[in-house]
Length: 176
Image (tube, rainbow, N blue to C red):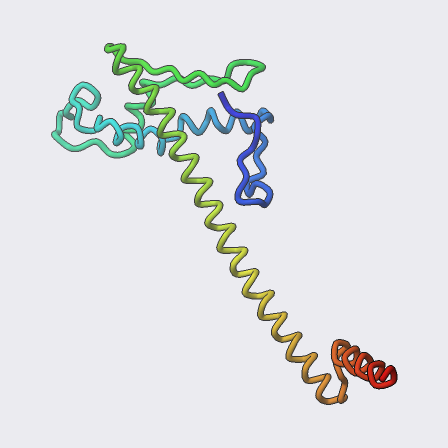
């Protein structure tokens, strides 16, 4: 089930701006389950590239490419969105029911890992952007302070705090 509340990155708005209740977001999640990248993650997580039942030896003896392994895995998977819900069916096919259960479980785990890595990457990019923005603003502030100090020195201006101190001192003298 796709959760309704979007993830937040630190205390700023969600970087991606995805809304889990929108249809296109849910369809994107479904498509994410069918990506070759995820298929390959599952193959590697279960070590299926070395399983002769999953990837029987080729006639020419060559190794399977990543695309071929992902395509073999996609034949064992069906993903669909239940109408009018946020529930996604992940159905796997295998002769061994335990293997089919393990496949489905691994698909969900690897999908969540991939999603987490994407969000972490987005947070890292946002963090780097904010640090750079902070450096630029700090530089601008220092430049503005230098210009203010130069202005004070050229016009023999006294800061407001200094004038307040002078007035308070004069009031004390008058009071005395």
